[in-house]
Length: 101
Image 1 (cartoon, rainbow, N blue to C red):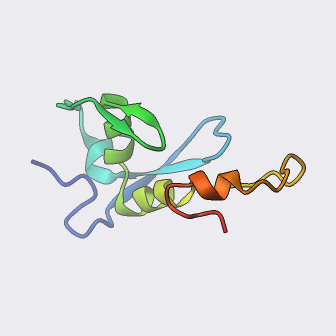
Image 2: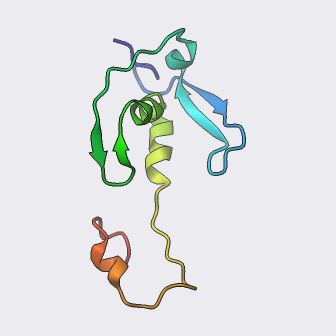
């Protein structure tokens, strides 16, 4: 077993993301970047925000350093388009995390 971003989660490499619309660089565990091969033993599961995840989602999230994972999880914030909002309050009612005031 290998901890890709070190024992304290601070051993990372910044990897440029070519043509990244939302992300310009990814924070990846240094040991992951040094590896010659990656074997993923994964399962298939449903996820509330991203639909169904498997090997690609687990590799994408799992290879990130601690700071990278914090960035990935904190970037998903609700947005209300005021031009399209009719003020019905439905978004507030159906939000599973009460994120929309």
